Length: 393
Image (cartoon, rainbow, N blue to C red; front, side):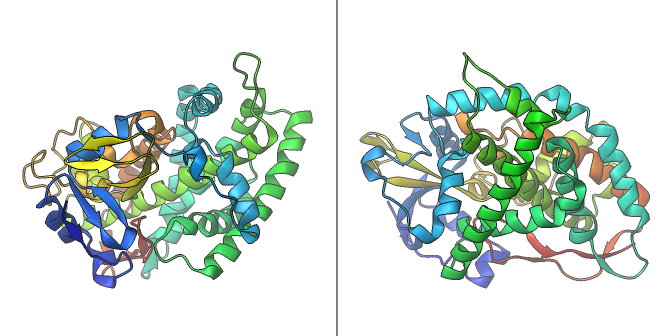
């Protein structure tokens, strides 16, 4: 297995990681990424296979668990009870309970409100150049998830800050200050939800928090810590990825000139899948090996980690012709951008719904929309999103 060196915080890499992925794929399905000190799956076949392979998972093997540092206790408590970090049987129970509340009916019911929200936001666009991320791409998903959870919309600035601070823990640029801020925001987020969930226990409403409280499987319900962790996960994952997907999507549509013709009712779904393929919002997931196993010429021992590089898998030329070209007519049967296997994103239907509504309305209402500045990606690998998106209508 070839060892490659590439700093994930290098500015050139952050702006365009795809040449590194191309180089890595040239050495096979797996390479050893020196900076991360672990093998990385770079082919579509390897990434998809590892997503489905139950010999690998998210949860730390029991013998490798260590007590985290005291200063991170609030953040670690949320992580400990997160669906994202669990494996069966705990994952099976948690996901089943969440899906009982996070229903397709509840998601579909949000559509009219999302449409109205998009128009309301566009009505406030200024004539001079402005940041579309702040004005639109952030607002649509965060307000939508507030409505879904039943949280007051005026809380959205706090929720955004807490979310950004917490997910920064997954970034390659993480520092000691990142940890302190994440711990503080985790505690504030937990305290807010603890009080709010208490209100919903005595004053139930038609919202996701109430449904999560009521959800039951074989006599079991979500514990207090599980409820809080689930609400935080749904908000963090439910808006962070969609913000990046919308921003990256608008950037791609404007740069390629695809525009409104690729956002018609009969083309929008293909276009969304191609946006997610060519520039996904998240570029890396990691897994632990649960047993000794040999794959792609490498021997994994129990406890070894492997990185699954979604951005590399999505541009594998063995799967797609001309993979670096944005082609909204491309047929995509399997999109790795929302993960796979047991951990396939529960919020994927909501993210797709938001994109299906927000993008066509934006380009219909703003036919002259154009870039005012060259967009730049933030130094936040393994996330992949813009720092701002300056446009003019």
